[in-house]
Image (cartoon, rainbow, N blue to C red):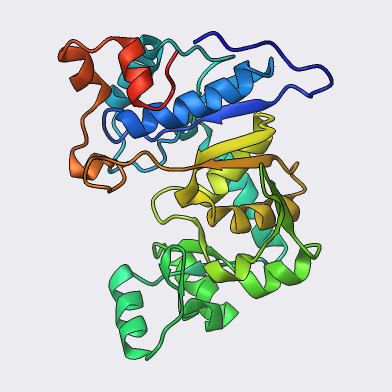
Length: 291
């Protein structure tokens, strides 16, 4: 736990750890947090903490408090105040309005059941990193009908018109991955992704790219499972004129059964390990970062 000073001639990075408060942190979270923390501290940079709590059905305040407790127990410190996404919804709404004003978004009134039926009826429906691609039902809706349904108060999400967005963005797009160089982007694999949910004026993709820009993050570190999302995130950065960070996607920490550690599988939490008598140093070593 004694990071080295900043190497000569290297720009100090700004990294972040951005968990969602949907449960207690487990070893996989510890690995990701330590990865980001060390990447910053070893280069004399800054490490930020963000709570990504825009899902009102799954996120709970007590878990947000527990995240701070667990990280402090691990020996991690962070710079500046903790950014809590649910306190910044007007900022995300402003981004949606800016994109909509350029004709890059459209309202989507479909339910999940609607989409599932249409996908099932379409043989060989294309899939992307987030699952089956949206079939474009509401994109084909006449503008007058859209306006009438919005005026009537019908609940809707906001989707990115991928074809219009690609036409508006500079090409070609790519991102810098540590250890791999520049990687060409293919945002179209996400189709017309949701940028504004029905319950909140944001989605993960919009909120995370906005906040990385807002907080001055220069090195995005996260699990390799989120690497495909970078293709879409670079498109949003280009459309909004946000700075381009570098990326470092780390391998996932796996359990004894070879599966990734996950809250839904009741992976042992840091609180469980602490209660069982494990020290912070032992847990850091279990997470892949021995002192």
